Length: 125
Image (cartoon, rainbow, N blue to C red; front, side, top):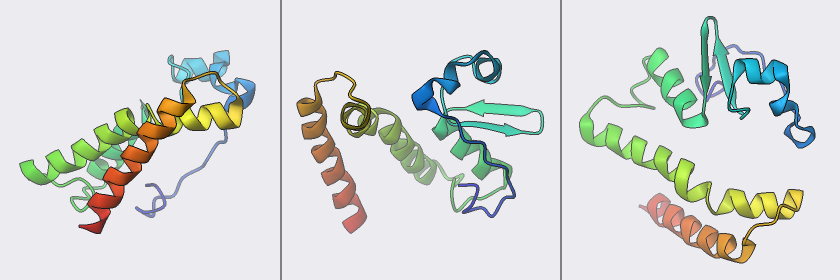
């Protein structure tokens, strides 16, 4: 989103595979020990959906976060979809295959295929 909004920014890579996101220094910034994290002057925001909303609103980008009730609800619906459905399916399957974490990956894959179909159907509209 920073690039899409053409905002100058510094990107700091965090090696979550090594647990850097759980280091004391990082936990001082985000007590949940999660990435992404946005620091904008005196404002620190965790959670990817909150970061997207913050950037769109700070830049007054109604094309990314409209103010009309129905349009805003649609954006919020998709942000929730990313946080819930995608996170509980595709992300879990990714954790299983990339990091060997033990999850019910068959269910995650099945749900992931369903989630991708929902997205494909929406994009075809």
